[in-house]
Image 1 (cartoon, rainbow, N blue to C red):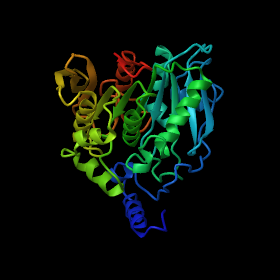
Image 2: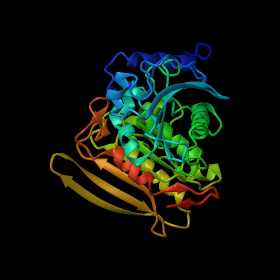
Image 3: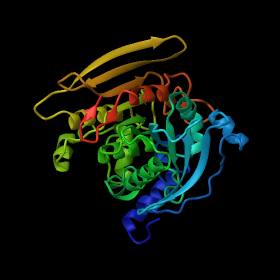
Image 4: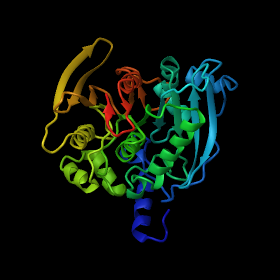
Length: 364
């Protein structure tokens, strides 16, 4: 809590009171008695293991015996965090792609890995997977502080911490620097957007599930507002002009149209933001939309956003009937719904189609 600033103290106290409700409540997504320091000390991990040395980890990830599922602690220039890393079977230091997975409220790396099944799919597709962990000392609900201005800027706060951690793990496991991706759920999805916008030279693409657009909230109260209603009037054009750049990161976004924690309008805002960042003011973007139904799972509306050359700059999935849950996820993890299309598999499919050109242009 911030006792030195009465206004911030009032915010923290109000948000803490909201936490008395069920975890599904909107404000439990991110709020609590939260310090402003990204360097909050890591807490002991609740589960740990390498390969199948820990039975609980094997059951959570479905990982084969030769793979690595390891707990580590990172200490960087702006803070420290525990994290877990998954390395697929028979990795012999060849350059593999890597995806950074940012969990949501009341989750941890084990829970998120189990629910998304990302380690199982990464074994098939041969991806390294990094799971930074947000401790309760940084946020009472274990949410990434996506809405704080100091945590969404390049070389500042949690955004800088995650980027530093990404680079360290890239070096540690010889990851392919042109194929580094970031994905997240809910608060983790919103933080993944922050990284996609501010570190376009690091992340080649982003996967966002139930997240929010960049820069639409400055404090906890405005975050509640946009989570409930979206930000239809936000001036993304002005934000682009202020940043003096048109850099962007291709992204794929998923959202349930029955989400009662983060309004699905936020997914529309996110796609609109990315298109504005990707396309010059003299050009226009266009969308190609398909609607699909399939017996036994939720139907969905899938839209491809393309620039004036016809190249895909974003992909949006609205899942009909899905609440605030990872589409196609495993019930072994929290906030999942197995009845939707497999968001994890679709994200990896999208990532496979784009890499980062160090000269500044995208190869898609």
